[in-house]
Image (cartoon, rainbow, N blue to C red):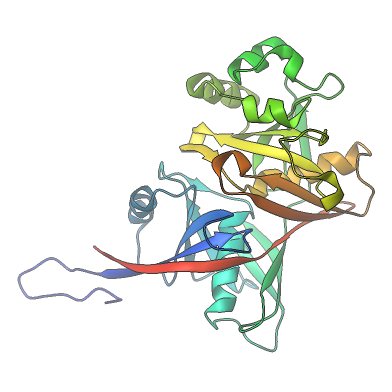
Length: 313
């Protein structure tokens, strides 16, 4: 029951519904799974963190009433470590997919505003059931926050040799809503070979002022990556020990900064449509589509609601 029902001489109890959304997925059991809890205004923050630990997904998102004028929905997202994270990635994409598929969005509108932390970001929702639904979201303007030096030390933290790093590109911290360390590697095989030292990577990220680490390559001519003819621009993996994520199969808050870097460095035109592959190593292949037009970075995708349940608290 919601809100809580008080039973005489007993503590209040509550049933909390939740949903499972496979994001950046065209078929079930692919993409990046998101646990979503709607109508979560009565849940205190510590309970949100505890629920995220219980559901144990890379992120659990809670839909609550916005507290800033102009916002349609406010999203709060927590990792399995109970840490609240920000930025518009699969945590937000899955929420809007669920809102559309559950009939909670006005049928005569396709543009909405989401509140994530202090940010108000535009969202476009194309389609309503029974048609396919696609969500496109704005991210914050790119911020390029500096390079990380020491190639040999960086490679060692990642379980690689210095020769596995791209000789022509530098590792750097970039944000389109969340600060991530982007590390260019020479091949998709090198991306797949990485075995980060969790404690050492956590320390390196803290020193760099970054939340997670995004390994990527733009060299897509080996068998480990998808066919470049499919329009894929980069092959990636993401690690985030700072918030309790060992490896994530699709990370929109890291793909956005990568798209901005590719355009800045002339590896994609401006404006550009960029496709990033992630999750293959985890057996959950994901394709993340991004748009870059000057300082505007958008991320697009679809997904499937694959399960629902109830927490008895």
